Each structure stands twice: as C-alpha cells, then as structure tokens.
Image 1 (cartoon, rainbow, N blue to C red):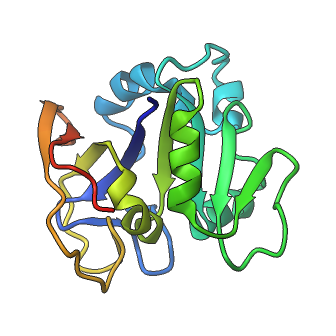
Image 2: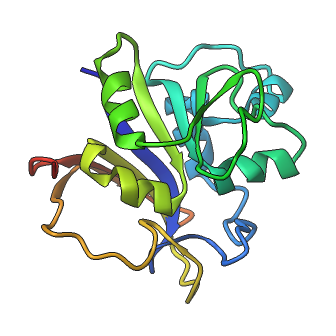
Length: 197
C-alpha cells in the first residue's frame, strides 16, 4: 500500500509559515539543500526543475496533495500547476472548480480520497501542506519528513494547524536523522501507533 508522507520545513517552535503565508524567513541556501534535493527531486516545483535541467523522475513520490493556501502560494508565483511532473490534488471547500486542468480538486472528505489513493498502484503520496490539511489528514499520515530549521518564529501557521485537540496521541518514531553544518536537522519519522478511525 502507498504511504502518505508529510514532507515539510518547520521552525523549532513548530511553524511552517508566517501568519500571512510567507516562508521568506527560511534560508535559501545551506549544505542541506543539495542533499535533500538529490534524495527528493520530485518535491521541487516544475519550473525550478526545468531551470536546473532536472528531468529525472522521482523515486519516492508520484502524487502531491496541497491545501488551498499552499496552492495559492504557487498561483502567486505564476503557476496554477506547480508540480506538473506529479499527479496533483488541491483540497478545498472554497474553490468553485479545478484551478487547473492538471490539478484535481478534492472538495469533501479528503481522508476517504487519501485512502483510495493509497490503494492505487504507484509511488508515495506527498502531503505538501498546509498545517490545517495535515491536521485533517493526521490519521492517514504514515511518515513525517521534517526539515527542522534552527529558527524560533514566535507565531505563524502551525505544523498541524491550530485549535483542535486530538482524542488520542498519534505516535511516531525517528527512522533516520541528520544534522547539517547549516544547522538544519532532517528527521524522518514513521507512525508506530494505529491511525485513528
């Protein structure tokens, strides 16, 4: 069965973006970038891949899930199909229709749709963001790949959204970890407790 992996950058106080959705506070360079990019080249936007001459298919993910705000970030940078080299889904109850012919809209029950996707043949499913979607899909998340930056932001958009309490803890264990010279820790977690119903 395919796995759903939440692959995301975070501050050490658990924020993935500022309140207005900016990620400019994350440093652009550093020695973690070429290593992580080499492992997961499919997580680069299509325009970036093309600019760097990357045409190698990914070995980990062939599908990406985005929330509305994550997708809107791509739209603001000039594309409604940010990961054209992957099968793309946007989860939103407010979009009136598919935002692009290459993007499928999930307007209701994202957990059920993710369960269907997991049963299909193929590579892994990448949960790109954001935090509210990660919170909604938490029972279906099998792995978390976290690029933990040595930054304290103080406020912003939380790694797993805000506001709701979970009925039971969702437990994960560290599968691998690596700390880079630039201070970024790349941590891979795998679920060890059964998912909630």
